[in-house]
Length: 309
Length: 309
Image (cartoon, rainbow over all chains, first blue to last red; front, side):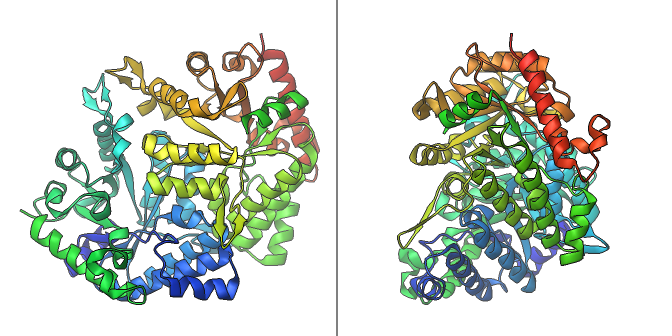
């Protein structure tokens, strides 16, 4: 799967991913009111509004980008109807030829992690019917439970040619509370210990020059990005934290390898809620998807001009 | 919420929780075939079969136990129809008067963790309608992202009188890979560093003698259980790993406080798939729920006789 993602990145010259993380306050009023009128103030109305909102963005930016990353929490907040919108978004992104990275940050033990892996990137067989329940291409995984929690995802990756990004160093302010702790026996911070495990987990999952087992490293910690890039030479790095969270193109140099590959940078609200910012306010709510396209173009310019040496 | 759980534990003299973690191989054939015949080999058939299977168990054991803990992964594996069964199970358990612990192990950053918290233990307000999307009472939370990831759950706990159990030391064999690492500055293993944070996060969430912020500590590590019990005197401990994973009543002494409270022990397949084991095989598939009741009674005896000094 990572080789397919890389092909798409090269084809579009775009090492970026758009985070489809809808919030009620981002959805333009004309969409929200339409669905409230039709379905009342219900979870179903929110689900339909999210899906229409996402579709508008996908219709306007899909030719520019290789992948999208829906954050399942934003949908799960609205229960089953929200998750229906998540699944429809995954399918619609596929119909546009995009790689879908499900930001699910799951992680559990043994058979439980296996269930998450099968449900999201694998398939179930029922009386000869092969069904892919959520059908993302790549998902994010939380490593706190150790190899037991991650390995079942790797097994499914290998079986179905899918990918994972393991949380190594997250973009949030308090990520250091545990991740940065210096580990006595390794003489390294925890995030480097996890990075070494990412290498080990990914060694049997090579797909071209990179492994189907990648890592998440936030744009907000560029010095750590440089170290982690070198520590995990075969791992693709998913980089959240660009834009609204504070990272910019010049912070990203260290996340790429010399081949210009190795990283894919996510922006969520900076793209999907662009029309809410002063810079793109002229588009207005009706033009939200055009604003998103303009923001993607600007992000690509920033990254092409500043993130490569 | 923790005071309500404690009341139920005292009333039934049962510091246990039944893990409703359905797997296809556990569901008796008469239930599975009924739904395959009705709905074909579909995710919907699996969802209905899981729900009927759970209902049978709940009808037979609810008077003996204070709480159930559905593991959402087992449902999520079957996509939207699986999650519909999860939600129906939560609602049915509530109709039986049980506390519902959603084993979701979510954890993300800021607004994303907030979305999970609202979706599972909180409520959304849409045009004056207050809706509880999943409506569990307590959920499990992964701490790897630090305070940013946990605090939004605590905020919702405080607002809506709900609870969380934070993963501290999990029951799986490889849980030590990261959780047991000795942290230089703290001169403690990581799980103790997390335990101290559980105390900090829970300090403002007291509900009677205990906090609504509890911890997960596996039955499979009894020595650590003793230490963690003392380190987190106000945290209720959810103890997985009893039964099928290897823990037994005598391993559990250290998880309880002198008041006989402070811990709630989970058993999943040992209860819900009891009829598959030699000990309860005489019940057969048709009698699976009676086998579950017998297994609950035996578990209660083991814990009452062996887990208290």
